[in-house]
Length: 525
View (cartoon, rainbow, N blue to C red):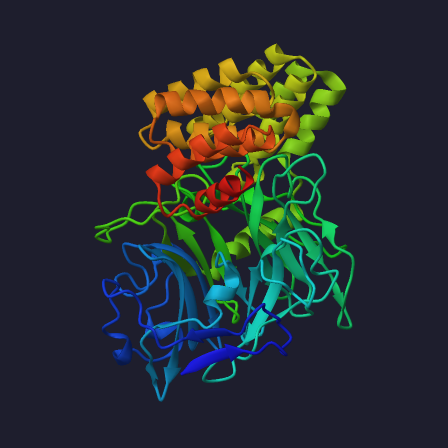
């Protein structure tokens, strides 16, 4: 069967796009056994409150798995993975009581970098694409698209109208029952960092895009938002300090007045030092899916190379019972953030009072979810910004002495120091963490911190210093070379940019972002 999008369709290409969707996955990607499966979620045993690998050996394999979504009462599965041939998107569905072997998705090429979630009613996939949205569209930006499952195939994809799509880039869209779309974008004037935005849909019309407030959005990266169909909660990924390492999953809940609770880290079941992300819920609300780079019992064999940030070279699909969020909902909707009280005490009465408030609150409130480490570390950043590094150090020591999250506190404070202009102290703490904690990756932390610094024009000197130190200590740090290439490009030094970008591609040939950047740089020569 062939899938065609004509030039007269809603989506207009420069030429007719023809994709054969009966292509099988790569020969070394196992597909035997699908025909014996039946029932929702490919007939798999449901997980409990501890995340489990989803279909190890069939859908979750030694390749790096990235995105997964379910449609049609969980009887259609769409998933993406990175193979030696690049990023590939497949779908399988239950037909005559049995699941079909995976086929290449007809909208794979349209996606560019596959990045999607399933719609709230289980009929559509929402994804972002850099393809033109209409005749004469010459903007080089990503926009949100949708494609509907027809029962045995796919309808024609179409872009959402403005202002849900704009002159800026929109990525990882997630849609509520009423059509409101959440996504991440890089549109702030002072930085190229990602933030989470939404465009509300009222009686079918999209409203002007709004940026979610702090502390959902921070000066660090926020991306991959998944909003509940009833908009009752939001899960997203952030690289803020105080997490378990690389990107972590965070959750916040919507109050009756429309405001959001402060986000909390979803803990060590849904987060790990190896990077976790791509959260999504199933249309029936029963399960949450996410990807993780943590080590598993899967025989990894040959490893793929992901273009994502940090330690995401080899990710797997996990799923967990959605009841894990029920207790968190009650806690967060009824209790004030501990950090708010401590920060207020500091502003009113100084560092000693803030430290005393911290030690007074914790024993009375054993629930660790009450303590957002990022918000507590923000108090340190406030002190450093005011030139009070000694007070920041004192409060950091109080955190270490009071809370049971020593490695996360040290790791987070180190990043806060570097981002606040105290690089020597931050690098010292990072080295200490590497010697004390076997799970701490100094290479990834340095590369990510350098990248974060590079997103702020006024901090590029600091970014260069951190990244040059990174490649000196870790000559195989491909992401550091990629970040250096971006900095030199922005400074107009194309030759240096090409040199560093070539090194990144040499180290990781499948690093899509670096390959694309190198092509653009060589055209500018």
